[in-house]
Length: 587
Picture 1: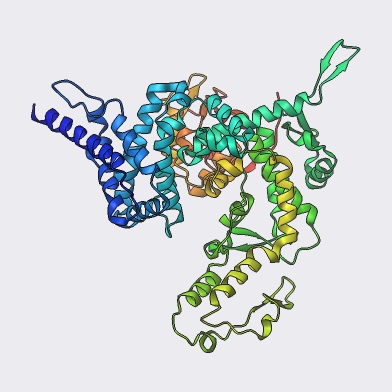
Picture 2: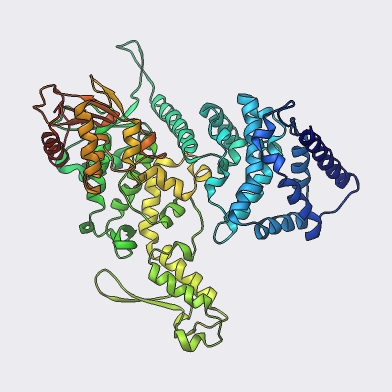
């Protein structure tokens, strides 16, 4: 009896307190005056889902209609500018990252999920959403602008937002894109707040957008055929090429293709092979083309980063703009058609593609980055004597020739001092990440935008999410894949051959596992959500066990002949298959 009485008293007290603050015209401009709003927000009864979902004598009833919480959020978002600044300042300095997430973000997300769960597809008509999401936006911006970030972006993902029907989210996104600035300020659009949507939800949203654009591109070529007495159109951009001349022929066909052709669904045909492209042929096409375009012998790239695993534009390569343009188109086509690429760019590339500013933290050469940071951190007045720097950069190009770049007019005669060191670092980073590779990057970016010009990626994705969509994840959880695998043709999880297969996978090296995944699915990377969320099937093949394993990469299906209890034979055949098999054929 006591607990419900206390809960009801707290609800009345919070409600009365907020109404009194509003009625007395309190001006929340001073730091101490806005702190009480954070104290209200961290009331445990607001975030305890068990409490809010129970009622009667066995449980508590607290703000069941969300009216008190809405009043709190309305009070917060109505703060004057100085009050807003103080509110955010308190939020970022008073709470640890764990507390910031659990005390401030979670109550807001909890209420948001309940509102969306109750309203379903009618979420646009729930008047509580804008104020709750506005407060979440404040916290999100505060976290993003802090160095380092207070919490990971995933802390703001809303399960209910991510679970909304993709078609409804796309409709909202379309309305937002069509709205002008005034309409965007007067109307509420859920898609204007993509930080609430999980990476998987964003992928699904962009897939719907891409599919509709494919339909539009296909129907744009609609024409009337008098002989067939009907309208005809080609839904695909068919790329028929020879394996031996793949790079040259792809360049030629891309150069001749109209912009609308690139936005149709891609189908690849390898001349002389019978494979029907349901996705698998396209996957292999991208793999082979990436291997050729990113070969160091092209001179287009310099390897940087940890163990030289990252590709960066070669500033000395001025002879292959077509190559950079093709890489950009390749990246756009892969993203547009939902194919993972095995490319390794530093985060600076993904930030540049999304038109986000670059800083010292985006430097590809971490040794240079540390040196510049040491210069910024040095707080004595003898910077000129200690570092002996001028406003210029001396380096050697790919041919061993020494080059000097002046970072500002007269820079060779301007020493770096404690007064101008920030300007020096800014100009140095600008030259390394932007100016020195302008020609190469502009060609690459133009190719990418030739495919993705109408896409919403600029608005929806973060740089790390764009990278994940294009290249996938290297984190390969094969135990999760085993749990998610389905079986066909007479196999089940307890079949002797299947048991031996997973035994082989468990004992295999990481390199062998990667090759096996590539053989079975056409990609050595995991999609968003990891291998445990990927559709994967093991199908029973030759019942006599006389053939090698094969696969339908279009459908992530591994065809495993029945080797029975013979583990050694299975191990030998699987190893041979993944090492020696290439190409497509039909029987």
